[in-house]
Image 1 (cartoon, protein in one colour):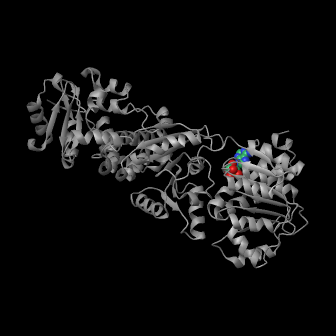
Image 2: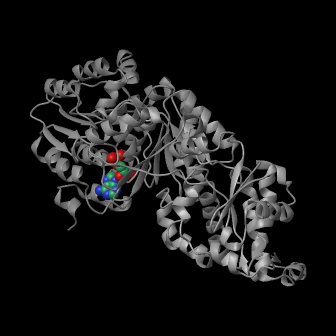
Image 3: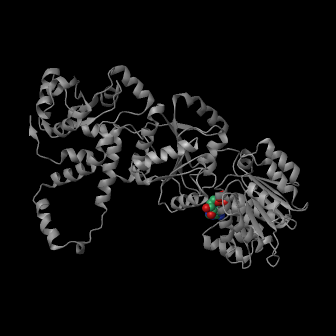
Length: 592
Ligand code: AMP
């Protein structure tokens, strides 16, 4: 006997539950189902989407229906058309082994005539948005006299959307002895008032505390300047890579559309959902997102109410929401069904004070993270690329003799040289975005701007310094000689075991390309674009002896530690010693 059977559900429903793969009831199902089935009490549920509340009211609702009676017996009222569709889809799935059940979904933005027709066929269950239901009631297309159960789903959101009067009007047209279930993510006084007025001695079920953060969600933020928000968003998406499947919350429809357009233009697999889309467009977008054909969804709070998708890895707050409830509501889109997820905020300095408020009221803790440096993103991209190559299955039958003949060119090459060429090809794809990319963290950037008044050059870290016999003059000579970049365009800072070269963006590719081919005292030189923070070099690399530069740096997190925990998961499996190996592969270096 499984847990669902213990709740008193009928065999047809148990069969459907099994088919849907639900193994055991969620807490809200465990609490609500027996009460709704046996006691005839009303249920007041404090629960968000993702807790299994649809089944919590849907399964008893179906079981209590008189299938032979074709009149409307159950009414589910919810705020958005997406939610309406989703609830009726869920109810259809739960009733797949119950013949003779008709469910009508009625909502605005869709043909009224078609909805009237489906109601005329006799729907025992109506799932409706308040506005459209009111219209249909005024046309006498719905009859509510035989309704024995009313469900108000996402009641707080219906109130936020201004449907309070409509909801009360609808309730007043239903019979006195009906059962009422009310679900809400929050419990403001207006909801309490409605509950008091329309419900009888309801059983109160709270899934977790009000607004309590789901423990499986990591709440993170990074502080960026407003003008860098979009770049920071892209960097985070790039760093997370294909692993990303999430919603980016924007404040306005315009912003939603705007960022979605920009992302698409920049080659990301994104789309958006907001109130200005037609019903057809919204359904198309939702389907593509549900099937992961689109992995990045831009949405406003209201539009996102209808998004019921499991397995989201991230929720990104492009701006913090005005209402704290919305923060928890947004975050609750990820980390469903026991999975983990990240709720990440791109924070303006001006918004910083709001974090504390959210922490306190939502009972969560935020962790500050750094927007990954450009180099980290490139490293990550190369790591993924290398892993993809390594895990490729090779089907030799795909190759023709001609292919093999052509491969001779590659066969004749040094292995390291081939690897380098392949990786360069991949790197070039991102070079435009990343070779000259600044640090996007607001704090560091401010520090850097103090040091670099002109701010227009790019800083390159080079792994040789005074210990290798360099001083400012001979170092500049050497850099100019190997790179072909004129000395007057270079500013150099020679430190103990490393140096910096500041150069204009245009010269960076040549500098990197040539410096990375050098050897000094038999040691491979490494050059890379670095963040501009004044103390960065000192803080990260102080005291490294030249002999074990690479290794120490890796071990001590020379790259900022865990910049973006979306990456934590895969970095565990990745052993990208490529950075080191690459330098030690023994490419032929010009001897200095
Ligand atoms: P809801 O809170 O009703 O929107 O449900 C959130 C998601 O959880 C939906 O995709 C449901 O199909 C799924 N779900 C509901 N109940 C269970 C359960 N007992 N076991 C596993 N998944 C469930």
